[in-house]
Amino acid sequence: MDIRIVGVSKAFGRTGALRGLDLEISAGELIALLGPSGSGKTTLLRVIAGLEFPDTGQVYFGNEDATGLAVQERQIGFVFQHYALFKHMTVFDNIAYGLRVRRRGTATEIAARVGELLELVQLTDFAARHPRQLSGGQRQRVALARALAVDPRVLLLDEPFGALDAKIRRDLRRWLRELHDRTGHTTVFVTHDQEEAIELADRVAILNGGRIEQVGTADDIYDRPATAFVMSFVGDTSAIPVGFDGHRPSFEGRAFDTCLLGPHRGPGLFYVRPRDVEVTAPEAAAITGKVRTVHRTATGLRTQISPGTTDTLIEIELDSSAKVKAGSQVGLRFLRGRLFGVRG
Amino acid sequence: MSKRLVSKRPVPPPTAATERPVTRLCLTAVALAFLALFLVLPVIVVFSEALAKGVTVYLETFDDPDARAAIELTLLVVAIAVPLNLVFGVAASWAIAKFEFRGKSLLITLIDLPFSVSPVVSGLIYVLLFGSQGLFGPWLEAHDIKILFALPGIVLATMFVTFPFVARELIPLMQEQGSLDEEAALTLGARGFRIFFTITLPNVAWGLLYGVLLCTARAMGEFGAVSVVSGHIRGVTDTMPLHVEILYNEYNFVAAFAMASLLTLMAVVTLAAKTVLEMHYGDALARTTRI
Ligand SMILES: Nc1ncnc2c1ncn2[C@@H]1O[C@H](COP(=O)(O)OP(=O)(O)OP(=O)(O)O)[C@@H](O)[C@H]1O
Ligand SMILES: [Mg+2]
Image (cartoon, rainbow over all chains, first blue to last red; front, top):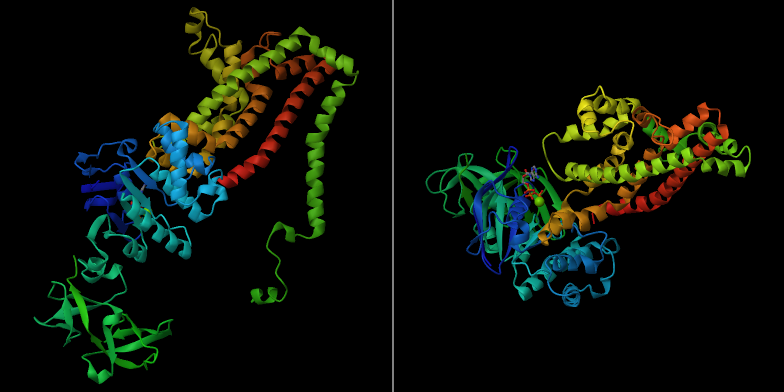
């Protein structure tokens, strides 16, 4: 079932958590909500769930206006960041809770359904345990099974792997993707881990300050960022303030050659990815900079260079054989970069 | 500089245990002596006085109809006041912990009022309200309803004094747990009362039991407030604590201490139950940290 969010605003006291937000989610899609802390991801998810009601705007489930529907009537499955398992119930009872509440069949039928779900989340042997006897990853899977039990129309997950360590995170991520491919639930999940969003989701929605900055596939977001925020939020970037002489951008009065991406042509900020910066001899480039720091990393050298007379730092990756020393002057060539006008 | 000096020796963790052994011993001794003098000794005195003339005399004191009446009245008051306070306490803490509303902090302060007001004043409030000179006095008299110097007055006074116990126990517990579990139940399709009975209540069960125990203990022993509203009608509105006073003033020491020993015994049982609970409860508390 597809979901449409139209012009939704939600304020808590004086802070606007969501500000006129639009988003369309297609049926069967796995979409990630990505954004910095406080950008409104959780609030949006709770608005979709019906745990929070928008001040203005509409939420549509298919063709049905669900804006005023209570949580219980929306048929959603929600997985909370800290699992929110019922501590005094066994794993079995946790998963059966929704089925019993909704009277989905006799005790035997419910037991059979719970059995299926336990198998799905690979926890068949843990039915009689209490949540405190499970590991974090196991708890998360119980939470997922519990949410799936009532056949939700939409599955909503709030930072589902946020509290787990890196290895388990990766496993669960892959497992969730497989599960999604098998069951085909429309799924919305919140994360502030870009890698997770890009790896797991069909599409990623970037939130900032209660609005959507961009929605698109990983390629869209990474290679065709719509705004300066998306450009700087996703992946590593550096930015320098530039002027524009009609053809070429200029830094501190010196025009430089580069392949300009994106539509904006004019003064503003020039954003460049580390891999698109080349270090040359000082005479060979229009822009020179001073090397501030050089660190050895697993794959090479990571250096910070401040161009011209500024304190702005440009971070780049170099081969470990490159001969750069902290304090020396180097030339900088930007192979490609993206111009954005300064907002305001 | 001082840091360097200290770090030459292994630094013991900065706890009270770093006090010199002598200091520790002295402190412990003082605490124990204090306990013995003010708690253990009186309890021993109560029982030894009660049994001064032998077990038969001790038991005979309970054959007295007035004594019987006092015991029955106290149990009746407890049986009414505690369940009512349980319901009100749970309702109040639920409202405070799970909902945002105006006047919430005022409500929290009000719940503590019985703790800070002298019990005698608590009793007087009811005299001022329901006494023949009081606010509702004439109306009550006209309709032949007796509150003061009767069971309703005693129950009211007891409830007032013991109200905070359940709520005080539950509010922090419920606040600590937040509404996450309830929200999870909501998303699974459950509604108000079902959520309350299957999620909220089990989550605070141990704390609730603990609060009820304290509430019961206090309700049995309440003297001040009840003394003001009871009217001391022997065999009718005398509760156990009041009866102890009457017997004592009549120099009937054995009977007075016998009755007192019964109260003490109830208190000890409550205390024992509380200790047992605490062992579970500490465990349960640890469990309530987000799972
Ligand atoms: N119940 C609430 N009461 C008051 N303010 C709230 C409430 N919930 C959210 N906010 C505010 O709304 C804004 C958005 O919060 P939200 O929880 O949606 O952010 P988020 O993107 O999920 O952040 P995080 O990544 O830290 O979880 C924040 O400024 C937050 O302080
Ligand atoms: Mg959040």
